[in-house]
Image 1 (cartoon, helix red, strand yellow):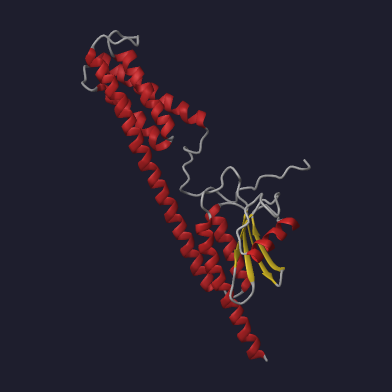
Image 2 (tube, rainbow, N blue to C red; image 1 turned 90 degrees about the vertical axis):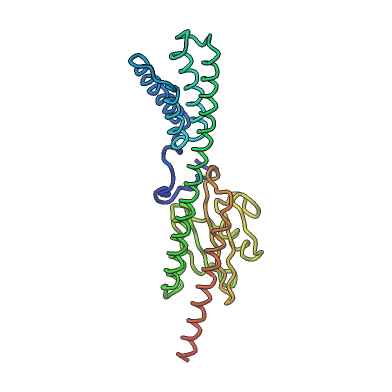
Length: 284
């Protein structure tokens, strides 16, 4: 439909450290949390009908831990609250009511709820830190591979192609890498289904000329889908890195990784220019 700019399409498969369960819709995660608590309730009631076991309320901690590590903090807290209510309703006297006659049971229910809160926070924090560590390991691996491949590249086109592939692997979004000489785009490599328009190319050239990062949807092209980063080289051939983030999934600080890639790219382009210069002098 005219006048509507399509969202950038994510490139490739999601990163291997992405948790599919955490990415599931909130309704699904909360329903799963409810289902686990229901199973724990059935198990607790079944065991209680056969034998008397102290601290049977700890059965309700299991779905709290599972929910925290797989579904997020919200579903985990939901499991903790539902577990405390289920323990009160099914396992304390008078049964099948939320009324509690014994003060000891009040303490047991309160303690179960507090334990659920603590376990939720600890498990969720541990899971999040493990996920962040996995992301960092993946990024380091990509950067190491990129550095090795750049060293082995024997021409400018290979350098630009390797750079665009590395950026797509890091961010999983459409990528464009341009080389600019004397204000003209002399080479353009893209990964993904987004073709830069003329206005976006102009925004990229402006980013290089002003040596500033141009964010999507900002001046000078408010319709641009790309964030552009300028890459300056000593030999005069400038480069521009463009990433088309989905506005709803834009990382908080992409410049850190892009700047690292840009620095390596600048060194590689300078090396290629020096090599071309030496070959030209040799030929003459």
